[in-house]
Image 1 (cartoon, rainbow, N blue to C red):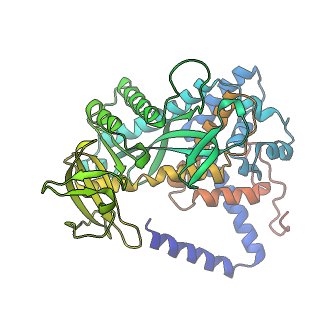
Image 2: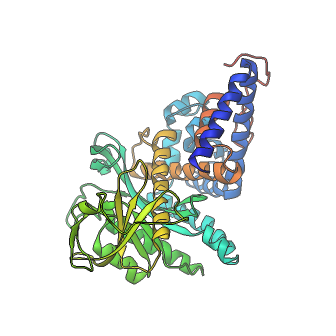
Image 3: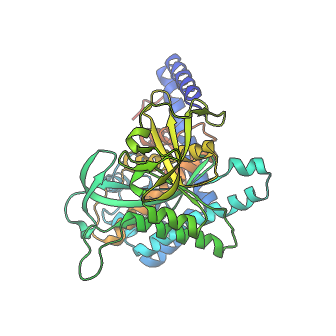
Length: 441
């Protein structure tokens, strides 16, 4: 949906809301909350996530109590009108230590394996379906691998996971947990599937080499996921990987090109130096300025002017540069090792990078990943992996179940404020009132 269409629909909805009476608005919001809860339940059923997870955690806890609602509550505290797990236990009357026991029930390796398995089980049937379709359908369901890291603010010395990291979002050094995430974006954002996650250790204890940096983490994640698909008999095409300038490492780019015959596309820095075929020496700063470059336009990227250059870098060797100019945006450039892929396709792949930032915003703000206080490293992994799964379930609900008619923000907002009027037996939600003329609690 284009920004203009989205804006028009938003204003139309607001206009309709103003025409309703208070009771009509209340009834409408209650119905929307009920529909959102039912859509979430349908997504959980289709993904098959709760049954397997509940069985595994029940076995670890040696408990036969019904845990589905509690696990979903840990994933989606706003579903029960809460923000933190502590508040959730108080509202639902649960034991205050229950979330910590649930999150610590599985070792961190099991949590990561479960997230990886979820990605495989979602992506494999989609790939087989698209592979048997026409070329036009396959082009609409192209995969773009996106990698990035983000800092979840924390303070103290929790289990050696908390360190000081640079946050690109806040442009300063923060105290927190640094998580590295790899996702697959299907098409132009039809679906965003997390496939791997890791927490970087700031200061490893004992003898040995320093902790793996995010470049080596991303390389290992990509190699592992491609190998996992190969073991399942899925022969993926050469991957298109995009990341921001922090991942512009020549060894990593060459590894993707030689090992997977893929393309690693990153944003260039202003300090990079390039030699053009005509002998000119330019710096990245020059590419970020409006100059007489050989500008082009394409119907595949409307409203965007771009210039494609071949160049040689003392660090990277032969590279392809794409200078991008958009209205009301600062000019920038992206780069990869020399490739025959067209400029519009590279630009469209680069634009899919923002979906991983969308995931991090959902984790931090809608699902409040920072509001976790547990006493074990396994529980921290459980907390972050469960919220990642919750983020994916929300995205699947809004894009696949609701066909884009409800956004993730609308789903969470309606459930957070009207959870008292929602019925869901599987999630142990019982409406406190069904009377439409009753005043809101």
